[in-house]
Length: 214
Image 1 (cartoon, rainbow, N blue to C red):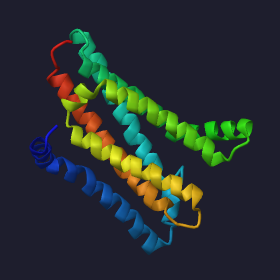
Image 2: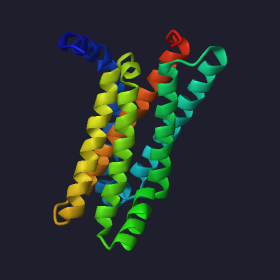
Image 3: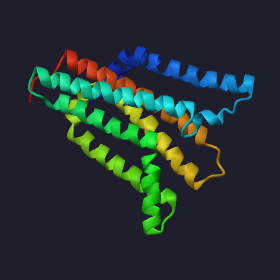
């Protein structure tokens, strides 16, 4: 990974980034316009069962479905390689995120940990997030060579945005007087659509141009 290689990939990804972020920003801006013109609370769209959250879940579910289908499509054609196995991992991990986001699993696990360990709910949730991050870090390291063959800048952008949203959620839990919950959800939504773009483009690339078996 060198600076020139990163720069070339970034230049190639500019149209893709525009296709990702322009509609995303327009979508959030329209919600604000609706709020200003109708009085419907802007914050209601960003709660756990709000429009933005549910739209993000649809993007996650779509990503998982395409990646897992892509893996089995490749597997049926030839011996599975590391890149295809990464596609399966990405799809399964995205499925975990989808289920967690839809059913708020991290909150349920956090409550259970807190009840049994006599610690605050926030600490229980943070432990759950830490487990998710460790699983992801291990599998990302395992498939680092496969990731390098993909448009990894999209992967990095998605991680930065989602990581920043988790960081903001951490601060909002510990500093409730600071109104950053909407900002957190905006970063989360932008991270999800970047994750979606990376997953779809990676599946498309591997299905049409599979790597040699390894």
